Length: 292
Image (tube, rainbow, N blue to C red; front, side, top):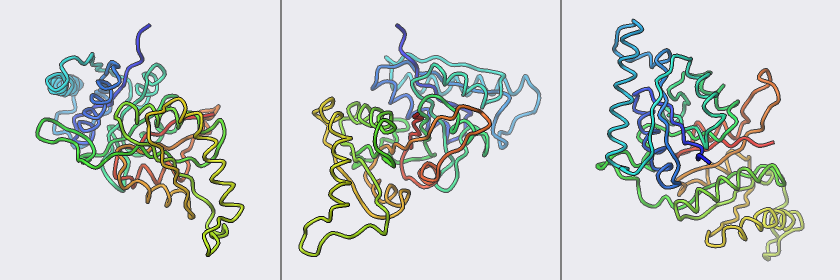
């Protein structure tokens, strides 16, 4: 059976190139094929080319060929293919995402999510894709980008935000633990308690509510500890908003994993506030994992 590919959207912008490098490393480490996808009808507004269709197609082909050559030079055993499509980028990504292990998009940096889509289109794909989507910002120090730009050291954790326990967390934990095993790093499981929760007793004894939260988090993580016995797991409970707690826990993260509920209708799509905050402000790649 053919392995599902890692699919990276590529338009030639710095953000998309960084995303392609992250996708190549991930595909190589997981022994998955990589597909670079370019929509010649949805290109960056600042590309200095003529507007004729032939010029756009030629530019797209050059972007794919140049990046393919660079990535194969770095990862010679990588199974890499390219696709130059005429469909709008959002449509193409959603279609390819149906059979992908993950989609990888570029982000223009802290404070905005753009990718090789623009604004609402990228958010549309993030909210509707049926596979995990990883966003990578331009120049991310956690990402290798060529021989002269190795990934920064000290990024030794995969951080996963667990807003709710139970079956909904399984998809996030599977993605997080698999990534941690792939890169031989720890998993930090983060759960936020309401700010009005009682504080620990001055003498060190935990109050019942905090004890209950610790027990519930431990129970959710127990089967994953058993499945991945070599992965170090950090249980991270803190008071505050879920977004603030997640951001503060990501100092040493090489990847942050958040969830997004699947929706039965294309007319009812949205990202939650935690996913929005992570996409805008996390200092590392962010994986948005759909779950039921």
